[in-house]
Image 1 (cartoon, rainbow over the protein chains, first blue to last red):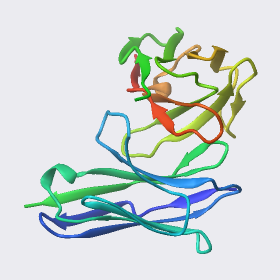
Image 2 (image 1 turned 135 degrees about the vertical axis):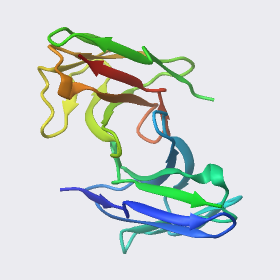
Image 3 (image 1 turned 120 degrees about the vertical axis):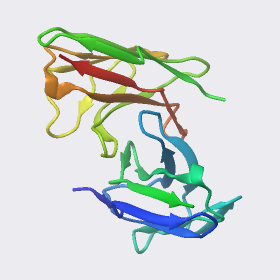
Image 4 (image 1 turned 60 degrees about the vertical axis):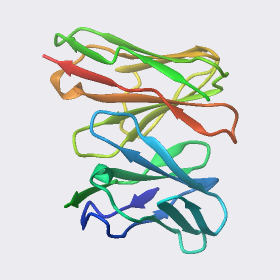
Length: 107
Length: 115
């Protein structure tokens, strides 16, 4: 079977840093994606990791450890507009999404 | 960049009728299309994977006779929800991929409401 788990909900304060974790057990692995999704909209690509380590992109960074089946998304300098759902997804011959994390940013 | 056009964006249909959702890749050839369903406050659940010119592969628990998928060309895939019921009301979204190493491009999604 395939399991991709994330915390259901997280809250944080504007200007803070938040880390969203993702653990996975899948039958294949060609890389891990992170997406942001607002309600009723398509997911928006944030980052992609295929090798172990940290990928940094502005306020967003993503880390991958393939041996541990673990990834995290780090959001810095949080803004109110970052309130959304964050989805990790594992790519093999198909793309399977994790359970998703709803992030609420408070002033 | 790669664009996938999905139509309609919203549809309301009567219980028992069928609804067709289209996804077109506008500037690339989508060798593989993926169809997802998303219920409120949940993540995207993969329904099926289709490769151009061959039958779709359905995920466990998805009724292939109810959710008909056609991928007759490299730029068009359709999902038909047959004999729709209120419990089929959901957000349906497609994703297209060019080759096995390509990235995934998502359509804008279809909000289906069955009354």
